[in-house]
Amino acid sequence: MTVVTVPYEATRTPRVKRPVVGGALLLPAVAFLTAFLVLPSLVLLAYSFMTPQTGGGMGFPLHLSSYMRLLTEPTYQQVILRTLRIALITSVATAVLAYPLAIVIAHGNPKFSRLVIVLVVMPLLVSVLVRTYGWQILLGNNRTGAINWLLADMGLKSIVIKLLYSETAVIIASVHVFLPLMVLPIAGSLARIDPSITQAARMLGASSWGAFRLITFPLTFPGLAAGLGIVFSLTAASYITPAMIGGRTGAMLGNLLEQQMTTVYDWSMGGAIAVVMVLISVTVNLAINRLVDRRVNAMNAGNGRNK
Image 1 (cartoon, rainbow, N blue to C red):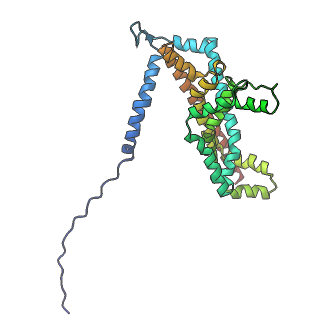
Image 2 (cartoon, rainbow, N blue to C red):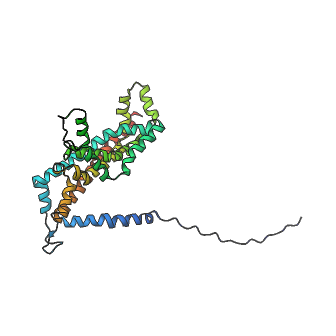
Image 3 (cartoon, rainbow, N blue to C red):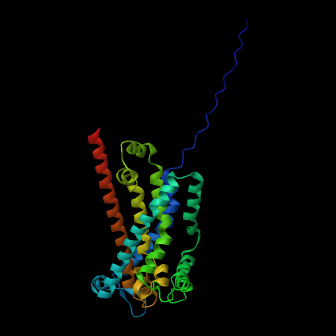
């Protein structure tokens, strides 16, 4: 038998390119947010301490008078309290309305769930301006509004519901505008819950309400916290909805900010209002997350003791 020796030719293994570092992928987003969010926010923060100049623009000396006026004058205090009240009521109302829809989406019949998802998401495809115009038509005072016109057509001409240009109108429209942003995170939390947990509770004698209150509801706290934070922040910063259907009695901090920046040209006060709006949103979100973390930790500790 003849042995044939084949010469070995060394081949260079191609170098594998190193994967792109994760931080590099974030650079475009970081640059965009820095240019169009961080820097303008810093400019507003600086303006809130500066003094308007005679020839235009802002300059020295620095002062705190804008913050003092905003926090001490009754007119501004009323706007701040109204903003907090409307944002809080809207957040709670959307949460109450969101849970039934989220339960249907997460655990309902698949075909019906898809239909509900479409109905929930569809308003997001329409401009907030258009939706607010719709509520303006519905809530119109006297006989110009659809609701009052319907009451008159039913023979109830003595009943006139005056909702337009009020806090109630702002809350109703805000709930409609921001409801999808509450439904989706809660539905996501519900979808991650193992159905066997609630089934076991029912087998042990718990009612449907008891199983929801003691098991399902606590397990949805992360989604609820996300929804509350989003809805509260967006409602507190609303401008279009309160401007169109709130009137003077429904004006919020966003409307006051626009007035100071474009009508009064008091950029120092406008900057102070913007800073206060950011602080309110950050504080409320931190408080919500803190409460949820404490509740989740308490639940985990209880489960650990039961094992």
